[in-house]
Amino acid sequence: MKGDTAGVERQLDQGLEQLNLFLDPEARTRLLRYLGLLQKWNRVYNLTAIRQPGRLVSHHLLDSLAVLPYLPGPTLVDVGTGAGLPGIPIAIARPDWQVVLMDSNHKKGAFLRQAVIELGLANAQVALTRAEEWRPPQLVGGAVSRAFSDLAGFAEAARHMVAPGGILAAMKGLYPDEELEQLPKGVLLEEVVPLQVPELRAARHLVLLRVEDCLP
Image 1 (cartoon, helix red, strand yellow):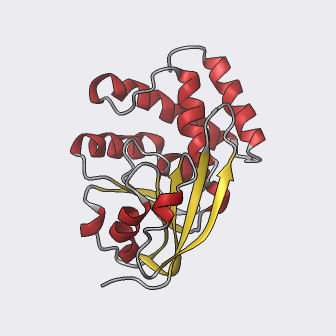
Image 2 (image 1 turned 60 degrees about the vertical axis):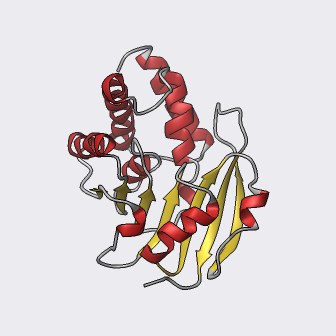
C-alpha cells in the first residue's frame, strides 16, 4: 500500500479504538490489505474518487465499521456494495457472519470476487445481480445500503430478501426527513442513529427500518 504505511496503520488503530471496536490482528491486517487492493484496482476500474490513504481509512473503513453495532446478524446483504462498502469491512470484522456483496456492475463484481479470494473471506460471497431480481435460498436477517437509493427505493428493492422482523439499514448523511415520509407500507421506522465517524467531518446517520412482512 502506497503512502505513509505506519501513519495509516496508526490512524486505523486510533479510529477502531474511538469506535470501541476491538479486532484481532488478522482482521486488522485484512482491512489494510483491502485498502491496498482498492488502491491497486482503482487505477484501472475507478472504484472510488478518494485516492489519499488517510481519507480511505476515514471515509471508507471507519465509516463502514461505525454501523456495525447496529446491524443484525448473522446473515446480511450489502445492496449496491460497489467496491465492497460496507460489506467487506463488515465481513472482515465479523467472521461469524455470512455477508452477501451485491452489485450489478460487472467491473465491480470482478474486483469483489478477487478481493474475497485474496483476503480469504470464507464468509463472503458475491451476487452479481440487481437487488430486485435476487432471491436468497433463505431469507436473511438484514440488508444494508451505503449509497444505493433513497429509503423508499431501498425498501422496495430489498424487502423481499429480509425475513419478517428483519432490518433494512440505510447509511445516510444528513437526517433524511423527506425520505422518511415516503416509506412503503409494511416497512416501519425503527430508529435513526446519529453516527460519529473518527476524522470524518460530516453528518452521518444510520436509518434502521423494520420489515413487517416480505413480498413474494
